[in-house]
Length: 198
Length: 382
Image 1 (tube, rainbow over the protein chains, first blue to last red):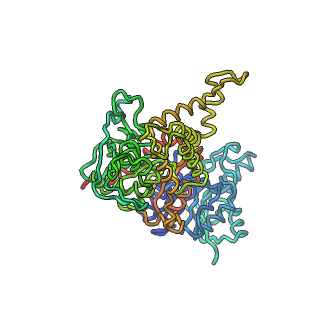
Image 2: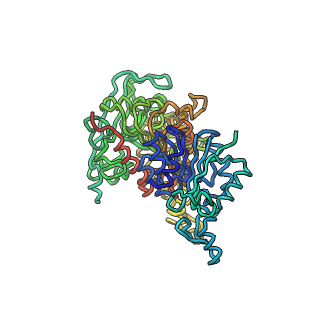
Image 3: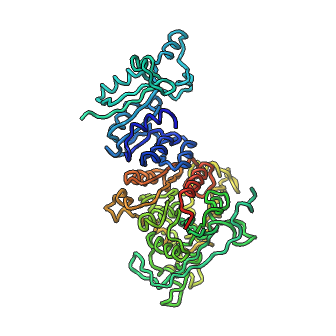
C-alpha cells in the first residue's frame, strides 16, 4: 500500500464508519476492509478508478465532490478522509465545512506549496514550480487551489476547525526531525486530523 | 470471437407449474400458475452460481441465444449473457422467467381461466412486483436454488431485484439495479397513462375481450409503443440516429412527407402490436405505477432497505430521463444511510433509457467486473 495511505489507516479506529472523498483505486478502503473491519464508502468520478474499485469489491459511488455532499446526513460518519484532493476542488473551504458536518472528524492531506524547492523554483527561476510532488505545468494542472501549511492552518483558525493532529512528511512520506522543526519549509505533504471543538 | 463462440446457442423454453393456490397482493387467488422460463449455463453442485434475470415492461423469458437457427434476432439481453460476456454462462447458471401476467407463455390474460374455460383476458387479476418475486421464488425452489448469487434487472426488472432484497433478504447475495427507481415519478406514471388510454380508447379493444371477437387493438398498442419508445430515447440520441432525414416525399411542397423518425416509430409500433398483448401491457404498466416498497415503511426508503442483507450494484445512464440517474441516486443514498454495501455509477451515453440493453463498453466493464468479483465471493462447495 502507498505510504501515505498506511499513515492514514493508522489514524482510523477498528469498525469506524469511513467516507473517502476521491478514493482513487480504492486501496485505502480495501485495506481498511481487511485489516480494520471497516466497510466504508468511496466517492470517485474517474471511470477507470471506479472499475478498479468494483474489481476490488470496494463500495465506490460515482459522485463529483464539486457538486456538494448534501446527500449525506449530519454526523453519518466517524471519519471523512480526503487524500491529495483538497487542492483540486472548486471550493476547498466549503468542502472542509461539509466534511466536518458529515463526519465526527476528518483527515486531509495535501502538498505544501511553501516547500523549499518550490520557493527556490519560483524565487530563482521565476517560474511556477514543477517537481515530483507537483508534476503539472501551470496550464494543465488540476491543482487550482494550492496552499501552504500556514495558509491551511490560518483557514482552520478562521473557520473554527480544531487541528487534533498534524503529521508532516517529505516526498517519500517519511517524517524527519528537521521537518518537524521547520515544517512549512521542509515538509512536502501534511496529514491533518481535524474536528470541531466541543 | 465469432457470434457462435460467445452465444449460448439454441435454447428451448421450459415450463414450471406451481400446483397450489397462490394468493395475490390484490386479494384474489390463482388456482396454481405456470411460468415459462429459459436457463443458460450449468447449475453447480452446490447450487451457488445461479443468477436470476428479471425482465422489463415489454421483455420476456427469451433473454439470450436463439430458439431456432433461422431466428433473425437473439434474446433481448444476448449482448450481456453468454460465455465470456458480463454474465458469463461458463461460470453462472442464468434463470430468466416470463413474469406472471405476461403474454409469452406464463399464466396471464392469454391463458385459460379454469373457472370459466375461456381466456382470462381483462379478468386476469392485478399482479404486483411483490407477486412476481413470490412466484419467482417458487420457480427457484423448483430448480433447487435457495440463494441466488445475483438478481439483476433493468427498469421494471431492477424493481423486482429490489423487491427480492426487501422480501427475501436471505435468498440473494447481490442485487443489481440498472436504470431503475424506488418508485415512479408523476411524469413517469403520466406517460404510462397515455399509453394505456391509447389502448383503452381503441375501438377494437372491446373491454379487453378483443381475442374472443377475433380482433386486436393494434392501433392502440402501436401508439402506446410509439409514446413509450420516444421516452426510452434521448433528444441527442434521436438527433444522431435520425436527424431531420426524409424517408419519402418532398418537404418543399409539403406533400406526403415522411421523416425517418416517423417511419421508424411506425415500424416499432406495428411490430410491437403483433408480438404483445394489450391486456398484459395494461397489467404490466399498473405493476410499474403501483411499485412503491417504501409505502409500507412510512415512505422512508432508508428504513425500507434496512432489513436487506445483500450487496447492491446500482447503475444509471446519463441521458436516461425516463428512469433518470437522480432516481438511482435516491436508492444509493438510502442504501448508504442504511449502511449497506453498494457500488454505483452513471454511464455516459446518449441512448436514453434504452442504454441498459446496449453493449456500452464502460457499462459492460463495470457489470462484468462486478460479476467477476461476485464469483470470487460465492461458496462453490456444498
